[in-house]
Structure formats: structure tokens, C-alpha cells
Amino acid sequence: MKAMTQFSGKAVALPRRDVDTDQIIPARFLKVTSQKGLGKHAFSDWRYLNDGPLNPEFSLNRPEHQNAQVLVVGENFGCGSSREHAPWSLLDYGFRAVVGTSFADIFKSNALRNGLLIVEVDKAFHQTLISACPTTLAIDVDQQTLCGPDNRTAKFELEPFARHCLLNGIDTLEFLLAQQPQIQSYEEKMS
Image (cartoon, rainbow, N blue to C red; front, side, top):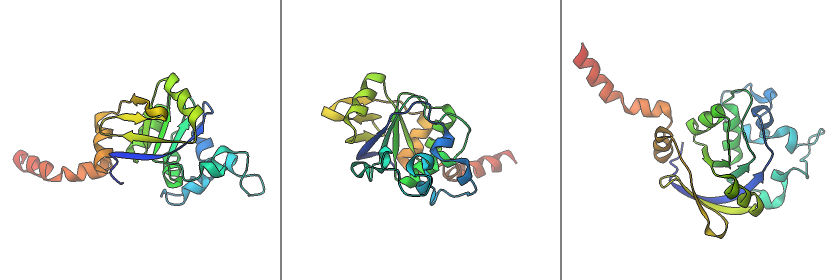
């Protein structure tokens, strides 16, 4: 994982509510154990027509939405079954953050553990973001702020451990491995 302190990126809106993990990454693509290559399958049933070409009606396929790094979503994003492949596919697609008013708990947890920033904002600010997309958003993980259109800023909360991992570019395993000297010292004292 790369450390995430501050970044600016193009935001694209997908304001559908109750987008579940099977819509984010359909089950037929869950046969892999690596996130590499999953981005092409993100929102596959919406992005592609039945015969394979891109669906020009789907918002992520529009030219002005290409290379977006921030996905602004509707309520209850990531509901449904628990699958780590959902945040993997979004990360591999190129998203660094997902902004919305509410997220399914297990999706939020999986996303943060894999380095995908989840930003929860209030409904009024959210509506401003939806209306402004595509736009550029500036996110400061350290200060936990999102700067949107007209320099309007919103604060967001991150669980301290998730914030620590994002700021340092580490996952849970890397955090634990970094504690090895203290663990070894403790074990030596206890034996």
C-alpha cells in the first residue's frame, strides 16, 4: 500500500443507493486471490453491454469521467455479502477514495484495511458533490478534511487504527510485523 496523506483527484458520481457488493464486483469474478486485474470487472454488469462493448450510458464510461480517483456514491454503498474483492476492484480501477453518506460496515472495514479511503459526509454536502461531478476534490487524511466545490470543506472521521495505516501505507499484517521486536522482548521476559 502507498501512504495516503493528502491528494487531489477527479471525482465521478454514482449516486445509486443500496449498491451491493455483487454489483460492485459480480460473483463470477471472485475466483482470484489478487486484486490485480479486477478493476476491469468493477461494475461489470453496468459498464458493459451483453455482447461485450462498453455501455455508453453508464456514467463511468463517459470520457469526462475517465481517470477519476474519487467515487461519490449513494446511500448504503457496499451492502450485501462480505467480499474483499469489492474494494480490490475499486482500487485496481484507480479509485483512491469513496465518498458517501453511509456505507455497509463490512464493506467499509474491508476497504479501509486494503487502503481504499472511505469518507462519510452529511447529506447537504453530499448533494453538493453529486451536483458538481465531475469535479476535483482535495482530501487530507491527516486532518480528516475533504475540500470540494467552491472550496467548501467537510470534516470526516476515521477510526484511529485505519487512519494510522493509511497515513503510513501499511496494512494490518505489516503493522503486526513491525511490532515483532516488542513481541519478542515480551516473550523473552515471560519465559
